[in-house]
Picture 1: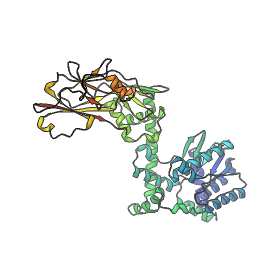
Picture 2: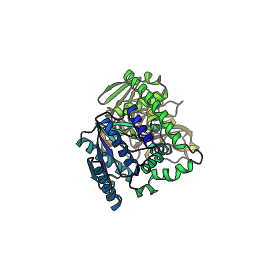
Picture 3: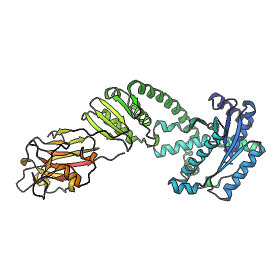
Length: 473
């Protein structure tokens, strides 16, 4: 078994080019069986491949004396192999409070930060991590439970470039039982981490409770999940390549703008549409973990739907998408608001509003229905349709606009009303005004209504209009 495991790891390193001859390699050693076995295997292979190994350990100070004992154990282990050893002491509990992260996320962030510091100090090309096949299967199950797409089903990569160093996982095809057997046959001692038994951690609950339960239905579940990662890695690589080709073919990219033609995008398969949106948003520095499915789908629908020609969507505080006729532009700055005007058509029941990330919903009703309706402050307006000059329009503010507010004598400049209300200048240019054919302003949507076209006992037809703000997702 022992020669089998070393040979398997060596074959994988060579086939996947996980390391080159003569590399300086940082080996992350926690003191547990996985990392100690990894160090043992790499140490044996280092004679053949002239690797320079450096042991790195992080004392997270989670478990007091137990954590200190692990650090001492790793230092002695490295000394016995005559390898340099770097011990990092990090007060992770304090960092958790400071960064508002959960324990495992905070520990991981600080651990990787330290490993990169050690790699930089020794000019290393590789950082070797001891994640194994059972870890991979657990990761897959966690992602499936939380919700993921094809790119999430690739699991942890065997190799990943980060900050000029390659992170490698030579044990990713080796199962825990083989690692423990290897340690037993070589009489390799290691530490047991008591926190691995704490069910407050999601991964531990997966490993201790859910995986054994699911194995009742499929004894080979970890192997099945790992086969799925292998299939998805290949398919994800292929689709990534196709997406790169499409990006180069149809997207014009500048430092803070990506532009494409809507017709080119609409011809793509939906899988490529979604991936292209992700790629564009990544190019504009939106972090991958923030690109949830609902957000991607909302952007895709904005592009492909046969709705109005011009629209603006704010993806989040960083990225805006401007649709103008056949052109789609992704940009990292707020677009200048443009004047607009739309006719309220009897055949429809809503108008999308550019720049405001909102829409107006409207309906016609008899007086009897109005009497049962519950208005929502300034978000709703009810008008006597026979007292207005049709057609009605929704438009942006214009210079000189005046409103005769309900409850006040005379008229007031719309601009002055906005200033009095301390409305931001960018919002003033996009907030919709409802006007009739004579140009009379009936309602500033979501803000104030005029005294005209009030519904009364003699009203026959009522127009109900409501401003609906669309939340970011």
